[in-house]
Length: 254
Image 1: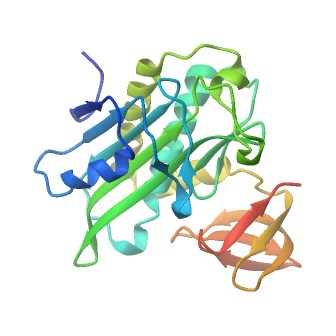
Image 2 (image 1 turned 60 degrees about the vertical axis):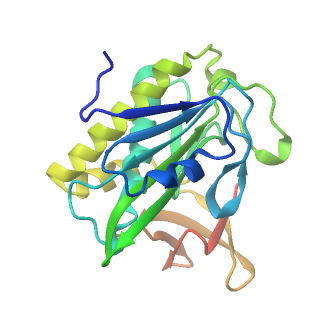
């Protein structure tokens, strides 16, 4: 029997265009912790509507549908980004990177980066009622055993980086358990412990980087310092602090 804090309702699909799209039919379902998993996602969606490309039977693509057990207001909507990002980061660090061979980072708001390459992404969609989050869909895409990537994706996989063949089933269940554990920590101890871990593992934190600002259509040199208690990225530039939402800025790696 698999180890979970709350029992899951697992739905396995041979093929689907998007697990998040499929998961939406369960938004008002009385069951909690519904997990949609497929080995063949044909049109996965990432942040800002970008497609998530994945080879059949080589990666993890799944969505989790759950109802918060602690009231979560719109102003704190960002916290689930932190919870799932931390969970994946901890899973990979504890199980596969104990000797710290490669640095694993969380790229704000919720990408997983190793060796300056993207190996995972998260898409969170919320159902909101009366300024409270009613249901959350967490979509996860993780490059595991895939070897070929187009250069423009700036992507890699766990197999490429760690030179290991990964058991998809084992990794899948570890991530779900880690997510539940991190979410339980949040409900018991509040967001500080979650935010502190996330900030300590932020990609490019305290390093000078280039950012493209969509609103002003120009580039700036800046340094990531933190995130706010509403999930905004804090960048220091010319000794001033600026705050950005995830659709307002783009990273350019030096």
